[in-house]
Image: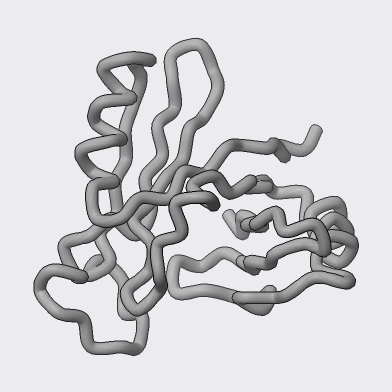
Length: 139
């Protein structure tokens, strides 16, 4: 059986660590945070940007996962788009199919490709203005 699911992905303007730690106090569970400087993203980061959260994942004790991050360096924070929908899992065929449909007629912001963390990943805004992240686990 595949492990593919939909999760809300919250965008923050430099306070993702604080917010995700707060959500852990609300929902309980295990919180994992990765800073931008943890990966070689091919760009020089200022110390302030390096310390920001590139990805956070809170797996609550009841099962749901809440994800979030600070917007990438050089990207404008758009308060009206504070939620992105993340599609994550290991069913590559299903996820690639969803990616093709969601990105068709929309705008691809990160082409689907292998990323420094090892998974395949792509980001897009669909034809209706909804932001989507698709991550295909390679483990």
